[in-house]
Image 1 (cartoon, rainbow, N blue to C red):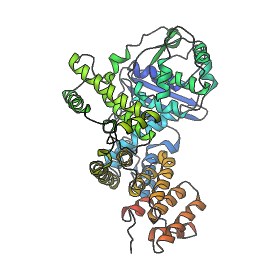
Image 2: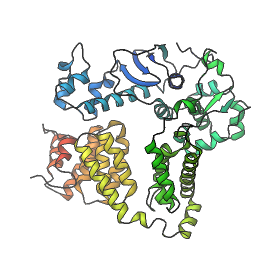
Image 3: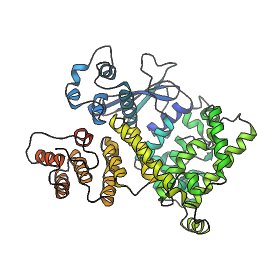
Amino acid sequence: MIERDKSGMEHIGLHLRKIHFQKLSGQLVFKREAVQKHLFFLDGNLVLAKTNIPEERLGEILFKLGKISEEAHSEIERYIEPNQTIGETLSQKGLTSQRNVDDGLAYQMREITLSLFPHFDGAIIFQEKSAVAGLGLATQVNLPYLIEDGVRRMKFQPALQQYLQRKSPYPKSKAFVHLLTAEEKEMLDKIKGGEESEALWRSLKYNPDFFWKSLYLFYCLNLIDFRDEDQISGGKEKEKDIAAETAPATSEDQLLEVVAFQEKIGEMSYYQILGITKQATEEDIKKAYFQLARKYHPDRFDRSISANYRTKIEDVFDKITKAYRTLTSREQRKVYDIKTPAAGAQDSGKDVAKKADNKFRQAKTLYSQGRFEDAVVLLDEVVRLNRTKGGYFLLLAITETKIPAFRRKAEEHFMKAIELEPWNPECYVGLGVLYRLEGMTLKATKQFQKALEYDADHEAALKELDALTGGKKKTGLKGLFSTSLFGSKKK
């Protein structure tokens, strides 16, 4: 069992850190007032989550993600069987696919766990077990990425400062440093060991909310450790070196890919290295860099590889990093573009346009298959490659509307689509549906009316307005976009 820290702070981040980096198996129970949640782990990864919150149950998640029909959702109680999970029953009866069930389980596990991060007053008990029997383990969630998301979502708590201020941090591993922002990396580099956190904060003069949350994130990702580690673990167990534990076995294909990239990277522009256009925003550059860092960071490769390969890996990552630093500096980027006027020319031409279009077609296929999370990943890359097509942003926004957690981004992308194609009624209809789903009836009505200004016979807009003004039939996203994507009329 993981004990409460002597400082008195109880938080899910501390438990997930120890469970993952010590590769523990067992069950964690969280209780707070009437809320009760159970997380199950195998070898340091999350494999199942249960909750007594109705909105977080699998049937609700599958419906919210658009992976079961409204009819199946309304009769979900009929499909509950004593010796089967609801996911197994739904897939066996052909009401959804096993892939959809797996996607729903992964989403459910993430959301149940992320909902624990804001709370510092819940009771948490972890019971270690050598195996977790009787569970469907097809879907697993990697905890470091979950920890990063959870810590970023939570608001600063004074309990964090109280917990950390007397501890002396020192650098430990760099296995997950690629998850940090540039400012966080800068702060991490300034941690040398030898002084307490409070003294470090006062000397660095960072914003307190940023400093204490970042320090906690560093600790939860095992990027730092504390000299008084015995207070945290009770002196019972020492953690293994994270780099040795988490560095994955390196395949021959990975090494060949690095070698191929290293051979051509010297002739590539910074834009080509990062896979972006010359018009890329700072956000686009950061996203491209972090994707490459997850793939080519030296710590992602086995330590046992030969010195020759290690040199090539480091050369590739050095060039990626140099490209990133240059292009995220306004002055350096300006100088680079002046000195190399053709640096982005190739990237803004036919090759990039073709690449974006190919990925867009793939994303449309994924959307039609109901694989919305996969489609969003591709569409993010599409709009990074080409930010000039309203249709790209429109499909991205439509797809994000299907995923409740992404709806805030969906509004932004609908607005971008409207900016690029103000004549396209589909943009206004899509935004109207988003507002309707979020309960913003007045805003939704205005968008449907706007769509009818450009196409007075737009069937979906007419049906939506009819529903909002007393009609009985409503049109969901599936019906709205399955046959009317990008402006076609339905007569």
